[in-house]
Amino acid sequence: MSLNRVFVANRGEIAVRIIRACHDAGLETVIGVSQADRDSLPARMAGRTVCIGPAPSAQSYLQVEAIVTAAVGTGCDALHPGYGFLAENAGLARMCARHGVVFVGPRAETIASLGDKITARAMAREAGVPVVPGRDRINDHGEAVQAAGEIGYPVLLKASAGGGGRGMQVVRKAEDMRAAFETASAEARAAFGDGTLYMERYIARARHVEVQVLGDSHGNVIHLGERDCTLQRRHQKIVEEAPATAVSAPLVDAMRAAAVELARSLGYEGAGTVEFIVDRDRGEFFFLEVNTRIQVEHPVTEMLTGVDLVAEQLAIAGGAPLSRTQAEIRLSGHAIECRINAEAAADGFRPSPGLIASWQPPSGADIRLDTHCHAGYAVPPFYDSLLGKLIVTGPDRAAALDRMGTALEQFEVGGIDTTIPFLRALLRRPEVRSDAVDTRWVEAVLETPGFRDEMKRSQG
Amino acid sequence: MTAMGSAPGLHDEGERENGNPLREADIRHLIKAFRESGCTSLSLSLGSCRLALHPRSARRNGGAGAEEEGAVLTAPSVGVFEPAPLPGGPVEAGTVLGSIRLVEGEVPVTASVTATVTARLAPAGAFVEYGQPLMTLRPEPDAAAGAKGRQGAVP
Image (cartoon, rainbow over all chains, first blue to last red):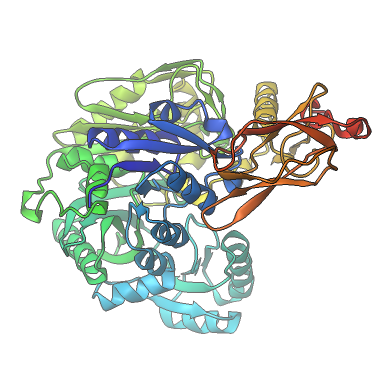
């Protein structure tokens, strides 16, 4: 079964990325857009554009039935969900299947079971992958105190249905448990419609390392190395790089093997990312979650391996076997990605939508920019603030960091505030050079008096 | 855990806590985008600064609003247009004039104002986009009060 026409159920840079991959593979494209995105770059690139609803994503990009209706009505035989929005919505995958549209992603039941964090932890444990010590279902405050006593303080309360830091509370002593439990449970209910919580040991100095996997419908599973996404702010990734040079080689090898083992045990089909947390103090790693979609930071892996991950997704969805065996995957050099957002970092990361008056990106053999932006484009206020992703490669980490520094210096955007000045200042920090950072370091450095001044100076 | 993954919507709650007021340019942009969006309300708070936008008079339910010279009824959803038989004379606001069939359900197409259908713009069985013109309406005099709804300025 080979695909002919792909419906792109997303917007922004990832829609551009998917359309390019489809056209490279000789596939036709149709994009479903909101009214606010009718004149966007992906809308102009796609073979056909269909308006699926008004600007707010709840009435357009999150409308499962409108999207499937648009795909069927335009004669599409496949649908690519991108990331965010409905990318990990098993209901969309199921509705596609009911109407003869191939969902570009894992099977609906794989999405559903990995989407529930408690089920995912159980699956990881069954596959022999270490999970953070903790307890799976915490029903009340009393149980929480008892579990924390067994695990040892500090502990982390997390939402079972969660992600992105919502419904998450650090608890340092038993007296704080009642308030933390109630806050986390209420937040989880408000954000995800499900107040179920679980508890994990709190890892104070953590690195975030994730392994990219690919699986096909013929039972083949490979990994394409890892990405280190330790530089985060409030659980939102800022800079991603590969390979994870700050983690010991045996630990990296063990994570890669664990990711493949887990994907194999699930009969995983498509591109996926197995996320791990590495405890810097103990030198241990633990399973966090599996993302059943293409990720924002996938270009890091593409630059390192030469494998086009979106093309692989399309081929797998069409029933083809993986284009390469594990032995054919070679990782060479070092790649770094910076997310460029429409935000005023010096002003509390205030969103900064509006008209892009000028857009002068850097260019060069070792530079890649994934974006939907251009001079004259008005960034709508309705969506995520991601403008683009700047990716550079170098023979080693130091060289890649130098190139990223230069590329950021050359990147000039006028008319709106962007996070470019923040990234310039961040990458100049000695802690980034020496890789002595953890997942909470960015928030700490933002509090230091000198950093704000440095951001202001970097605006030039 | 990705930026786009967690909070599709206006903006992440966490970004607002520093109490920075909106600049005039921001407000202008928000008003323009709000006008173009077809939303019925927008409320935003940034620290101590709050902004609420509403059209001057809320539209009646269903399709598009009416202009003085004649209203265009637009598709309330993407899908297949199934018109009802054309009524002989004027219909009241809320009268079902057809439906948009989705893969599993359907959305009614209703008259936005008391009006007479003057033309059908999309054929039966046509695949239509959200917002695509379906028919033109001539508002009847008693509907004049609500007729300028969509074109109303933002206060």
